[in-house]
Image (cartoon, rainbow, N blue to C red; front, side, top):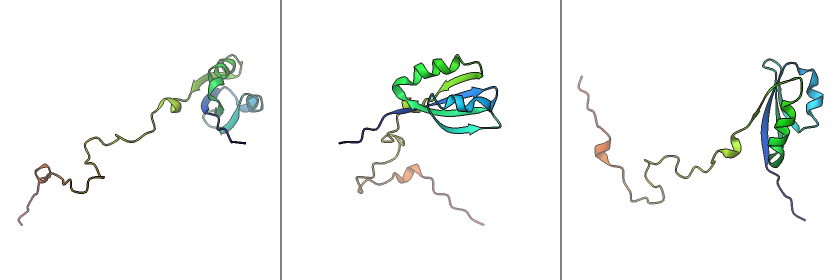
Length: 106
C-alpha cells in the first residue's frame, strides 16, 4: 500500500456576499476566507480545476473566479543567481578588480 499525493491547485473565488460559503464547500477544500475583501481560497484537484472554475463562475453569488498560477512556476532554483561563482569549486576566487577598493583620507 502506497500513499499517492494528488496534485492540487488553488482557486480564488470573489463573491458578492459571504453568506453562501457553505455552498462552496462541495466544490473543494476551503483554505481561507477574507471577510474584508470578500474572497474565498479553494483547493481542488488539478485535473478538475478548469471544470470546477467554470461551474463556480456560473453561480449567481460569484463575482469572478481566478486560477492560481503556482503550478506553472518552475520552483527549481538551480540557476537563480547566474552571475555567482560555483560553490562546489573552492579554488575559484572572486575577481579583485570587480570590487572597487576605496580609501578614505580624513
